[in-house]
Structure formats: structure tokens, C-alpha cells
Image (cartoon, rainbow, N blue to C red):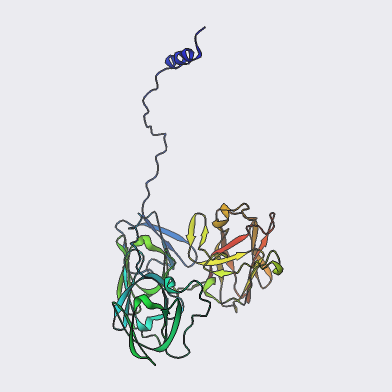
Length: 407
């Protein structure tokens, strides 16, 4: 009897030779990823255009209130940030993350993600923070002055507070006139700066936009042009700025008959305490963030606008009969996918206590479910509810994704 190894060899030799693999028309060919721009209308209708060869100087002409992109080539890897700063812009909505590059006179230079350099005037800045220079154990509030400007300077492991008037920026630091006299402070000791907002001197005309960047920055500006080469803007201070498209998460055209619910002040927005207050585990309802404080993530993508809550949750808005429609999407945040329980929730929308729409039970990992355009004409009170479902409260981190009111 032949050894087993000989039999195995004989069996292999007896097999017919494999024919060379030939691709045929019946085989699926992977689709090419074509960079595309998506224009969303006020009613929520989305229209796509291939970016190659495309250019526009008006979003209104494209009937777009929201713009985003698909299948872009990755942008250049960000360079090492020397002084990571967080800048709150005057007016409340604008917020920037970037590299503090210095400045000149009454203008500050900030390096944005993707390598763009942004110049900001004094009247555009409300505050500036350098988190790395704020001691981790610092517990005292870091707040603006009632009158004038305020500097927080690193000193002996803590922070000194100096009130006065900011005189100028320069590449090495800033000059502040205070009770100490006119004194220069280098950037390496500037932990935070608050500038008194005296008014908006912006004289620019054109289509106002708010641009959300992929790092969480939000820049109000004026639209100039959009093409495959980038997004061109004019800042409120009158400076031109070009952004590479891979760093742009979304472009919003305010004043076009829509508003994000996360922009509005709710009449009720309480934290959730599914385990009871005695255990001290409270989950806040947050605007444009998940309830854990991270970005809103669902369906494998980041959403820059929305509401992050934990079931059970109830948020109310006093609409005053000023709107006609509501649309958006809902999901359990993707961050629960890696938890032992993926959550189970049900979303509901009520208008003056009347049920308008209700989702099926949703779990972490489910694709976002669109909310159809709901009629809220004449509605005084809008209520968003999220209830726990079959798995009780475990992992019930729910997201209202881009809920939009339409006039």
C-alpha cells in the first residue's frame, strides 16, 4: 500500500491543469471613484456634479444651501503643529483650530489644516487659547474681562491674569498695555487671550457661507468660487483664502430659508441619567457633538451638525409658528460599535404634543434613517424624544443628524 504522502502527490498530479484566468464581461469591475460635489437644495433634494472641469461663482445659482464632497483624493498630510491654538471668532458661531503663526500690527496669522494661512483682524477675534500652555490641574475659571482685553500668562506652573488693552501682534508675541505699562509677551507664555468685541466692521458683500472643516473648525466667510482646484473665500476682514477640498466637510449658505436645530436655543434640553441621579452618571445633550463629547459619527462618516443625546431624552423648541418643515436623519452613534452593547432606541418627533414621525428600533451600526420632510406649519412647540428599546439603556447614545428647519 502506498504511503499517504505518495497518494496525496498522485491525487494532485491527476488534477486537470488550471486554465489561465481571463476576465470576461460578466465579471464585476470595481467602479472608479470620481470626485463629486453634492448640492443640496432647501427642500433636501440632492444633485451631484463631477468636479473635474466644474467651476461656479455662485451657490445660489446652483440652488444649494448645503454643499459637500465625495471620493476626493486625500489631501497632503498635515505638518507638525508648533503652537496649536483654538480661536473663537467674534459673533459666536466661528471657531478655528490651527497653528499660531504670529502676526503683524492688528492682525493675527493662523495656519489652518491643509496648510492654508488665515489672517484675522482684531475685530474678528473674541478669544484665543493655547491648550498646551494651560496647566492640567488648573481649576480657576479662564474667562473674559467685563471691560477691555485680558491675557492669561504662564507663570511658575500656574497662570497670571493681566487686564489691559491689546496694542499689536508680531511674529514673536503680542504687546499689551496694562497697569504694568506697555509690555511685550512672547507666544511661549500666552496661554489665553480675550479681546473685547467692539463691533463688526465687515463691509464685504456677496454670498455669506459657513464652512465646516474636517478638524471641527467652523469659518464664517463670503463665497468667491468653487472648482476642482479648491474653495475660494473672502474673510470678514477682507482677506482672500483658498482651502483645499479634502479639508472641507461641508459648506452652509445661511439666510437661505433654513436653520439647523443645533443653532437654536432650546426651551428644554436636559441631561439623561438612565441609572438614576444617585450614581452620578449623567449624559449631557450636546450640540454638534455626540453625548460623550466626540464628533457625531454614523454610517461610517462624520456629521458636523446635529444633537447628541443618551436615551431617555427630550428636547423642546419654541418655534412660534415661524417654520414650515423639518427634515434630517437619526442614528445610534458609531462609537458604540466597539462596546459590549450596541444600544437600542426609538426616535420620535412631536408637534404641539401630536406625533408626527417615529422610527423603528435602531441599534449601533445601523445606517442612518432619513426623517422625511415633516409639516410643522403653525407649530408652536417642537419636541424631539429618544426612548430606550429592547436592551434598556445600555449603549443608547443617539444622534439627531443635521435636523433642519425650513421656512
